[in-house]
Length: 334
Image (tube, rainbow, N blue to C red; front, side):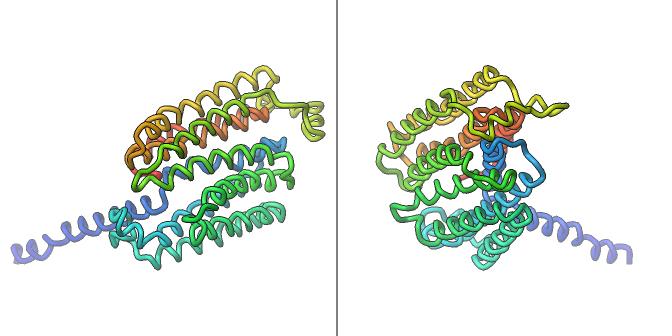
């Protein structure tokens, strides 16, 4: 009887091991589908938007970040659902064409995440929802129709710009002051998206060369001394906050030095990969250039924030860069 009992009990560890293996495989598949390491590039949008609007992060800013994360991941899931037939030929290892995730599950996740993103924006206030709604519409329009058209990169750049404006709208109820920062971030995203259109098969050296030139131009613009303050910034400068959080409002010289340092970090993140992709626009080098462009979003967000004298927030955004780079070694962000 003891032998029988032992024989009966023996399969259980193996069964449990198999269940754990399936759970890990399922988690890995969803991590790949949602490109989780790329999430580190998202919080800086709302934080930069709040700084550009002349405010520090508030609980409403956190709601904007949560909304952005949901809408970003909705776009990732929807992107792979829309591209499942193309990926079956060009990237058969991806979760949907490999059969690790069902297309219906990916589409359901995209819809649920979009709904969650809009609900979180609504909690942040009507101005935030007024930005989140067109942001969600842009994400769906890009994935379902615009991606393979000449308007694709512009749509993606618009989505990033709106994401930054979402932070300003949620934090202050205004977006006008954040428009310049939104335009700069959107321009960077447009350049990266243009390069990404040829990452599967390679192509012309012109897109990475144009992205390199765009990076140089943006670096020059964001590190340039800002003009006279707006009415909102003049009032903030006249009555700076006091207490332990007052360090977030440095003197102009300190803010300028930090802005320059972060601007250099932004430029150096992409310079070498863009040069290599220009000299040899093969799929591997183009993919590395795209990955570098995505990672460079973080130092650009930090530069824009420091430029708005949000020193503490800029340093917080900067801290996300090594985390994103670490996890990107395990799961591709492209």
